[in-house]
Image 1 (cartoon, rainbow, N blue to C red):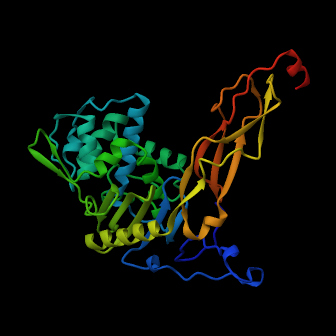
Image 2 (cartoon, helix red, strand yellow):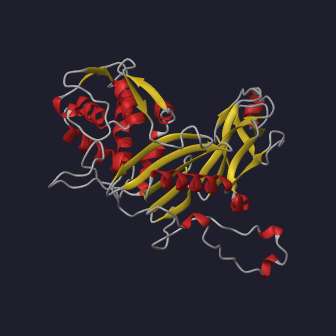
Image 3 (cartoon, rainbow, N blue to C red):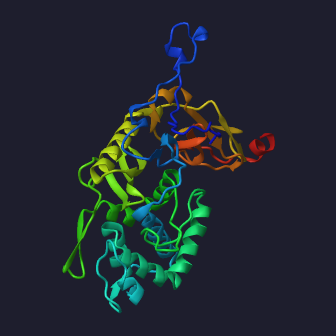
Length: 388
């Protein structure tokens, strides 16, 4: 993404004039957009992105480093889910609770020393109930100690480009005397949330309001007030401490588009929910569904060169229509790239995939469909091959 001018309170919104729709466009001057209504509110920092592309919709002090509180647990959850995806762990693997994990305060599920739980049970306690003791138990099980797990967290943060983050704990509690605080930014939390939400289990747990734990003796409660109330919302993680204020990294899907919103430093739980609602609703309102590629587009102007064919070139078309969500003021800037395979050999059946049509905006891919052979391309005889 191109460098942006430093501003203490910046809203990044792609605003363009649809020149073709304006009279005397050649002599028109570029309009300057006023700050949208979400530029200020009961928060210290805020950030909204398109989850599929990373495209920024709202950015207010998004690089300011702050304590993340329990939003940090997204990194703990991500590392465990990645180990499961890699085959190093399983959801039904046993985890024995250490004395250290059993002594964790704050939000917890009251794990006892030497109790044994499945990885899945502890992940649910972490993701739904924000349990600090479950976070420690999982970290120790994966890496041997919380210190070793924190090293993995910081390494993974660097790999993801979370340049404002440095973690000291696996849970996000305020630092004890002599310890350094966890630090991150709204931008980095969005990067982390975007990665975590790729996992189906993460989406399921983050959108769960309550769930039984310890065989039903204890109930997990999700502190995110938007779960079940904001349309399309499926997570991701709240946080609160005195130094951090009320925070949340949220994810929701509307109009076929997933957005990720982060607010940090809200004054109350209610403000956290209200500001997130404002951010997401504003972001979704910026988008419009646009059919960029039509299924009945007919032959494309490009011809596919085919070796050993009855003909030297084959006609191609789109396999299906493609509708994408585009910021309303950027529809005219959407581009389509036809990426055809350079060297194909006959015979080729009608409908064979020979490339991709990729819809882009500012270098981001908004969607794609296959490009296919419109008519069968049989193999030519020796004379055809000689001339082609």
